[in-house]
Image 1 (cartoon, rainbow, N blue to C red):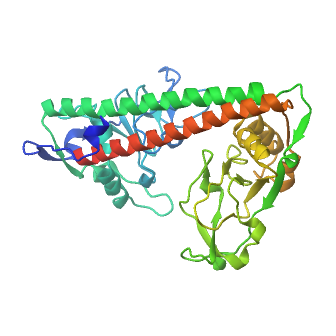
Image 2: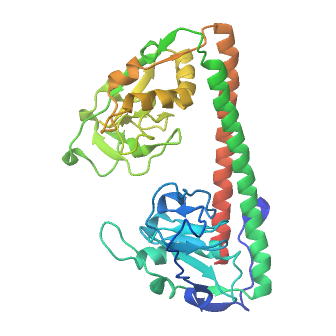
Image 3: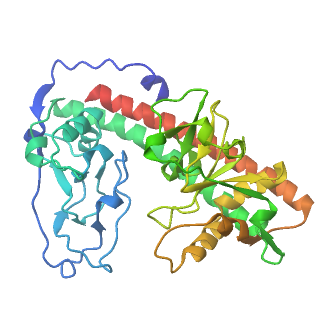
Length: 393
């Protein structure tokens, strides 16, 4: 599969027809007035659609009140018409009702439903949707505008072959994701059952190292570009899924940053404030990128006192017990903020037998390496999938 995708496909499109999106896709406007009476089990909001994922995997139930009435069925594609730049479009494997900020797409007899999610999850389609969105802070796009989008559509017999190729690639990615989930579950279970030992004494995070206060700054202090005399400032949005990303960074002059606030290799960036309690306390370990990097005032750094402490803390930050301890601190608070002292005084009961800990850390480190390798492979597979979709449509 990868050998096919590493080079451009040669596709003969001479028999393909230029069509408008509205020629092959309809917007069903079915509604359900009484979801309970109709036995609706799935309620979908924009938050349930993952960006750039063709699978609709999440929903909520009618146990929570809803004003949604828009009906969708199996095979429909749910497209996030609000803030189309988020690239949310997924094919439903179940029926239900959805938000008014979601447009339901349904293929007509000219288009195989199996191809629809790939036509929509195409950079050109999303670019078109963004261009034709209207509104200020929350732009929306209408189906009547999307209906004018033009693309080349293959004959029905070729549609089947292309759908088979595209879904084969998708199946490969889904298998890799399933393996990753299983590895991650085993990794987290080993931390909870072996590194964390409820029979042992309390170990405070301040025993492992120290907190680095974030850098305060004003908008006028920010610079347009990085140089050796400047410093990248990480914020909460730069800490995601235990990794640091450098999208939408801020840059300050080095004079405004203390030397002790420059992250060293192995330091952790920790989110101290966020709109969601689920994200407060999330962390990511800093890996040298050849630049000066620090953290903003709504974040903090954690600097371990030695390599052993650093290895232990890396796995504790990933644990469910750590997440529970953070939630306990935030419980009852209207503001989702942590203070540096909250992290320093946080404790877990850790295995004290050094020989056991040494063997366990080697095992846990191996899990992290394997997960990183698999995540890199998945990222590569997704890139190949996107390239394939863009070549075809």
